[in-house]
Amino acid sequence: MSKSDIWKDAAAIEAAIDTMTERLRERLERRGIERPLMIGIHTGGVWVAERLHARLGLAEPLGHLDISFYRDDFSRVGMHPQVRPSYLPVGVDDRHLILVDDVLQSGRTIRAAHNVLFDYGRPASVTLAVLLERDGRELPIAADVAGFEAGFGADEQIKLSGPEPLLMLRARRGVNPIR
Amino acid sequence: MTTPNPQLDAQGRLKHFLTIDGLSRELLIEILDQAEGFLGVAQQAVKKVPLCRGKVVANLFFETSTRTRTTFELAAKRLSADVLNLNISTSSTAKGETLLDTLRNLEAMHVDMFVVRHAESGTAHFMAAHAAPHVSIVNAGDGRHAHPTQAMLDMLTIRRHKPDFDQLSVAIVGDILHSRVARSQMLALRTLGVPDVRIIAPRTLLPTRVEEAFGVRAYHDLSEGVRDADVVIMLRIQRERMNSALLPSEHEYFQLFGLTEERLSTARPDAIVMHPGPINRGVEMDSQVADGRRSVILEQVTNGIAVRMAVMSMCLGNQHLGSQSQEEATHA
Image (cartoon, rainbow over all chains, first blue to last red; front, top):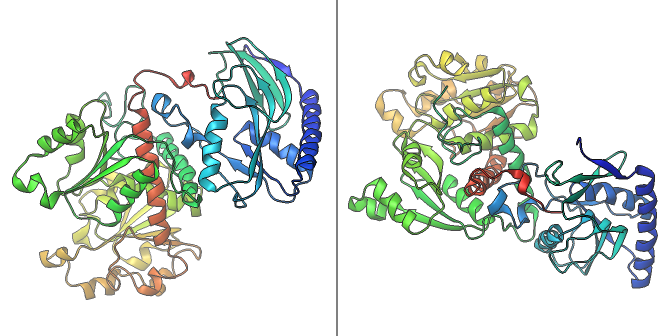
């Protein structure tokens, strides 16, 4: 943690989540979606999703997704040490889902999350909301709603720390590796 | 303590899973935590994760088993590995092939993991010592020595009901002398910090110096031994022991060591009752207890799949790591 600095402080993040809430509300209205199901990706995505879920006043409980069992780098790095059980309180079949993550970079987490979701059922649609959409995409995946959009150096890592307060930290690769 | 643990790689990660002996509390907790994650897979519409796609697991059971073999098979399949079930009684071993030749031939078929059960103690260690560097061995029971995945599924079952290992009294009842399950359980319980582990058995079915060796207390009276226990683990009595003069008769064993509601009344009111299966009803325990509200016997079976998924994926995931560190992982 020694070489990391704060990229966005708590106030900036809360404001960005307010903006995300409004954009999601508009998007849902435009598409005529009344009862979306929100699912956060462990760990940072769940923190962001908890706030969006409360601000949108969604009736159904928030789902949690752990993508460790669906990662594409298992044969290179082995089991991820901190696996939490996925928790989907309501069936996803024919439901409109809002998938929430903290940082969209390579797109590999979202690829894995799609595979998890489709092993639970066949959703009607998936909307992707991320706190930060940054450079470095390796797969054809884009966010529908993003709190921040920014580019960084290839060796720069942005990590959300939380759950309270939420801070976005910037570090050089190797100093403070993102999970 | 200079001999390296044959189950671990140079970084202390699980390569084989042969015995609880020598594993740290942290590693046992890691196995339980991973298993906890895998329990959720059974809730999915598609009860499968792609983690071990392309890996080949061979079930090598030299001793018969239904529950252990099928749960290992299901665990491998839920990890998306391909599974070979070798029926040893009709295979080359019956034609005289040695264990080492069986191993070499299956390695030539690019098997990544062997799950081995054998009546001889030490078989899994022997195979681990001779296996190719990229191959993992999982012990599914060797002689009287160890049955580590059974012990870990029992620990997971206990933890899901009684989360604080360092507050527990656990009683293990039955044929401790011949039981690889009991050995692995005693080691796991002590490693996880359970302060009070009791073993309850007729004198003929207790190994000598077991109290000192495992840090447990021995009892010869069931009601006395389960007094205030949080967990009561029953062991299977193998019927063949009845013929070897170690036990008088099934009936007499049940009279003295069979678990009934009445005998259980000295245990804590919220005590759970476990059994690795298959149960001999009316020998180790009464049906009332086996099917009663305290019995978690079927949960043990479910937890067994998750624990085996955890152990298999940890071993398989570590195979190609070499000296590479976790830091190289980026997955944002």
